[in-house]
Image 1: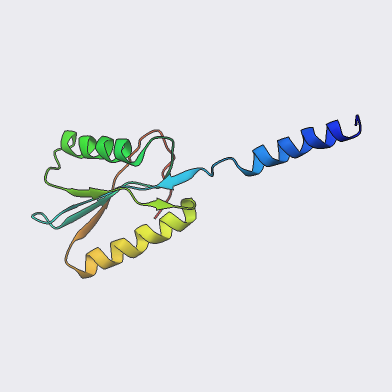
Image 2 (image 1 turned 60 degrees about the vertical axis):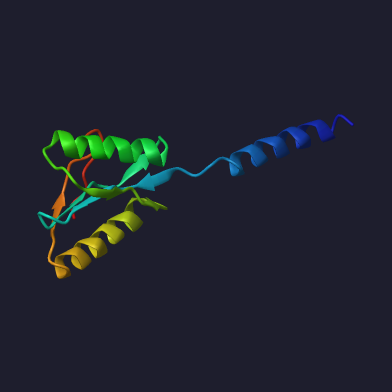
Length: 114
């Protein structure tokens, strides 16, 4: 019986390590059709709910003098994947007549080169 105790404890550690939720990565965008601008943040690890992040991004846009933006904060598996999605979105928006604008938001995260 004693020999099983360490195995049970080890199984508990392995189970808890593998069941931990993966870190979410997001970026936010805002499309302002009237000015033909497509604003994007850089990818960042998300520690808050999607609703909170999007509300914070909308507030940042308004405080920056950007109003009327249709916003979203898509989820991705990692920074690299989201950088690819942003590059694709930039091309799509450019082809659609909009100008991509990269924002330093959230400011406490390092900005990757696009």
